[in-house]
Image 1: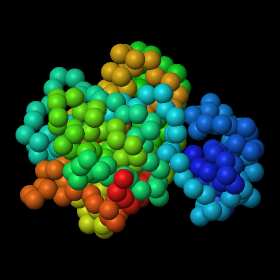
Image 2 (image 1 turned 30 degrees about the vertical axis):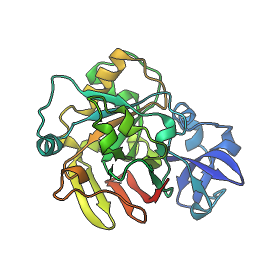
Image 3 (image 1 turned 90 degrees about the vertical axis):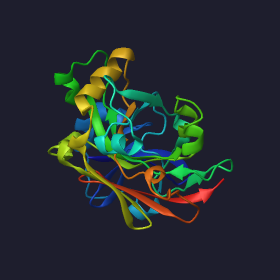
Length: 277
């Protein structure tokens, strides 16, 4: 299933993208937030999908999960990115947090803040947790994934480097793209074989296979669920690969009028333009 959060007729809704268009799960099943769909999958599958409630081009996307309780981002989690930064992998994942207010939807502009022009792209795979869990062993980690989405962990590099803590550079409003939708695991045979590609104005900037992660998906879920309980709808953004703008000579920064795309095989393509604050 492709599940999405969207606005239509002036109200926020949860939907299912089908061949006919968008099925309104808020109207049909009373869903108010996308994570509720994970526990009601059988009800959704029983719906008549032959008649859509909205055309896909008649909706406004929202961030795939609009109000995640937790957004954990993994830093330096591809070897190619470690090499270009001159750093080495630590014994455990590097983790920082994002706030929900820092996210932007598919088709919505990412906002370059007025205090910086060092706005960088980071194409990533996001994991969306499907049910409440804690102390998940690695061998059970796949069972708690509700779905996958594309993510652009947009970074204000100079603010990110003010100290060893990344949080300031990662939480300016509307700087992180998330969407267009959440794809449930049954739609993808093996996510580790998927390709991750980032394009800026049509030019390929990043490319990796998900299996290139330093700390793989089971390890990330096990680690995060140990220091924190995880709830349905929580997001783990798994890290970016080499090719970021800051590592290029000269550096490449996103600027107003640019278009940035993050594409993951079997998941979809997240598209955002860039605008000034």
